[in-house]
Image 1 (tube, rainbow, N blue to C red):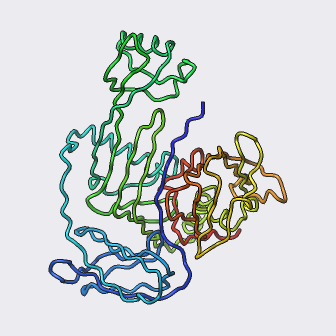
Image 2: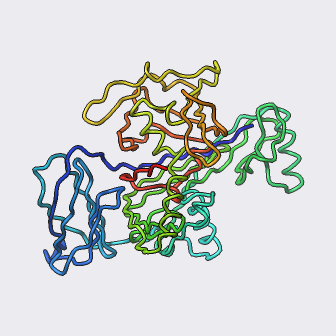
Image 3: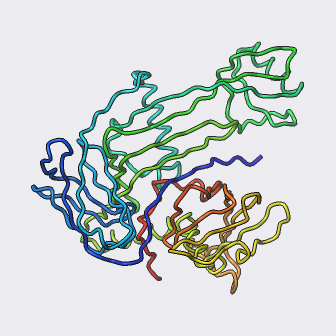
Length: 403
């Protein structure tokens, strides 16, 4: 039985039409005094700066349309959307943080560390990229848990097994529909009611919401970036035997400052490795209708046949290409690569390696942008691409270097 952790990532920087210079000022919304040392950046990119003592900032080479973010430790994050070149002078008015701790505040240190570990795993990732990433201010995380009741319908064989576990004081495991126990499936805890003569069991499921009292600072040593994550909203829900994560935030990448050529080459190589077979790379290839040339093949699981995307990929309008008609399809993505992970043009040659992911189109119409982002979380991944999280995520303006 294949188990997927479904991740929905709201990474929404807009792509470019024109390039210009913008400037502006950041003020305290109450006192109207300038806010110095505020970070102002283009969401999802390496383009950013810090305000001076007068609150003034300048951003060069801004690609419009875009989202401009102003962030400061003592203030709430502010966002302005630029859609035309008319708005070249911006005024941000930041509100002082007024953090109210939730009523169910986690005070047990062991429980908090468990929540921090869970958050790191599902936000940064459980692979090497995520494990090597370092969250430098995890004390800024705020955890809130919510519990909901749900009834499960079970058959007699499963009922018998659950009853035996309960009588022996053993945690109840989830079963497949055929009643065969699967050790790889997570436990069902917090059983609220059980009726020996019934085929229903009531369990208590929890969801975890994570926000932060200040922008998170994440060191990405393998990729050579210091990442600021502002306005975080993370939600993890246990849905049957899966964990579904939804998180949104604003991202600013600051490249390492290094004069060592060896280190720069290592970061460049690692960035390419993280980029290929990622949603970022896949969406760019899909937008240009060059999936096969970039090593990708979409297969209908029911028929076993390849999907011809020409049928579903519609013409570009205002930097957006719609994909229409794949909502009900059970699809998988096969990535064909060389041994070093670089894509293989499967219209010309066979691949040395293949990797499989699951792709789900949540709506009849799903839009993609040429920079590899999606305006709304209407396409999600499981499998290999679904396991890639913020620890392996690259700036929206990243371009892979040629060999």
